[in-house]
Length: 234
Image (cartoon, rainbow, N blue to C red; front, side, top):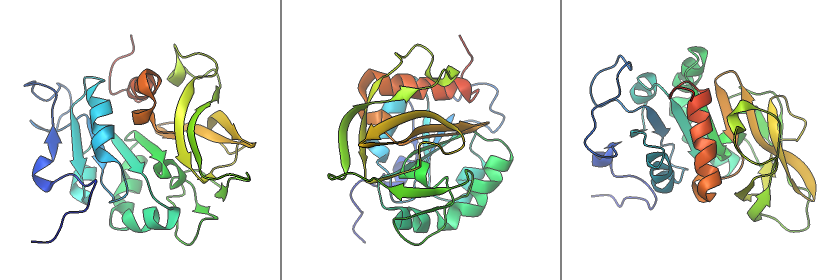
C-alpha cells in the first residue's frame, strides 16, 4: 500500500458532518451532499480548514475529482504551496472549476488558492485560472515570507460586516496580488501594500488563513457563506 502524504484526508473520510443532521434542504442533489466542498488539489491544509467550517455549523465535503466539483453547491480552494505546484495540482480539475464558476457556483480561494485565481505569477511557470486579471508578484521586503499576525485595511464591503476597520489576521506567504488589482476589497502591508482579499460576483479570495485567524477568521468564513447565498442573511 502506498504511503499517504501528510496533510491529506483519507479517502474514506470524504464527508464530515457536525452531528447527526441530514443534508440541508434546498440543495437539490440528494442526501449526503455537503453545503461546503473543499477541493483537494494536494496542496491545502484540509484538516484545519474543515474544522474551521464546522465551527460555522456547516456540513463539509472534500473532493478530488471533476464529478465532485460538478456536484458542489459551494467550493473552497485552499492552497499551501507554490504557484507552480498549485497550478499542477488543479490541472485535472481546471476545466470543471471554470465550468462551475460559469454557473456562478460560489468559490473561495485561500492563500495560494487565491493567487491561482489570477492569470500567472512571478513565482514560476504555470497558468492560473484567469478569473481575475493580472499577475501575482513577489513581496518586496527584506524579510520573507511574511508570516504572522497583521492588520488588514478593509473596504466597506458586506462580506466583512461586523468586523473592525482593521481586523488582525494570520498570514504565511512570499507572493501576493498587487494592491490595485481589480476586485480588491482589503489590503495589508509587508513594507509595501498587497491584496489581502478580493471579490467579484460569486468569486472570493483571501491571502490570509481564516482557519488560523481565530474568531476573526471564523467571521470571515461566515461572511463568505452569507454573501455567497449558502446561508440566509440575518
